[in-house]
Image (tube, rainbow, N blue to C red; front, side, top):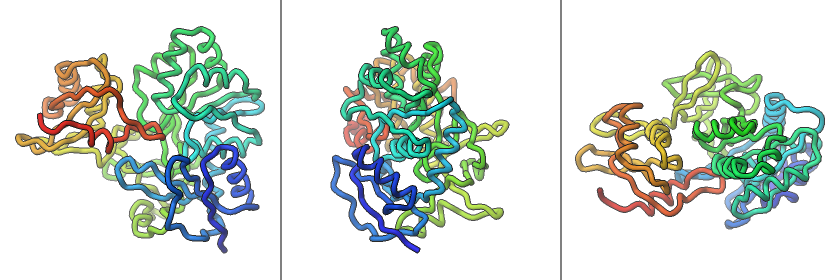
Length: 379
């Protein structure tokens, strides 16, 4: 059996209604379309009956995909999130993320599952005061929001200077932060303010976050294969729309289960998932594999380099090398010292480039393509 597939503008109120009908079966499956881009093309008129949502990935690596999610996977994700976050009475969410990404969609799905209506932050540059004012007007018993690290940093900075904002944010039951790694220093500052920050790990292929603070949802099983994290469980996507070859490669069947191969390097420590970087974010420098994610994590511990982004570039001497791109005032010497201590001399960055702004995707991730385009050529 099939059902229609409808493109819905990612305007929160319209999408909320369309998702509600997609999940209860009274309406078509939906594909949220970003408001500042042309409408998606090349879509089928119909999808399998169990499908409720098709979501397009950000394509930060230049390889966008359309991920197919069933009603069951979305509702299992919402149930897992609710169980992990807890709370009491009526849970209410604040939408502060673009609704065409899975993290924004999930705020709507969780609200539908809880029988509540989310409040929506106005679009535009993120403003901590406006966010806090909206929280103050929320009526639920337990208040939540999903943010990316850049938004969390703005909230923490505002709470450090305003006791009013600090007290409002303290009244929330949880700030769910994901999209990319959250710097330890930022988590420490949030903890010092008494804010409850929960780190979320997941992707469109897992119906959003399914590992909170390293602990998988009930029913989600992690394993490590060739250093890469794989996940199984009821939150997995059906695959990629119109791409059975990629679906088969990324969602292999093994040991009687269907797995999602995340592409992330990770380890399991007593059942806790610890992600250390992307398997494909590696350069070969002087014949040695260097994880740019590990280098970036070490660089970001240096004062003035908390927003650093590491890129791999061609290098005449070593074949490839890494470049730091930052808006901060930290030095290359300090960064190289930190990387040498944490990883080794072979991993030290070759140079540092200062920019006025780090281009970001709407998902909160650095726009690597835009950063690379603006990078000067040569040493």
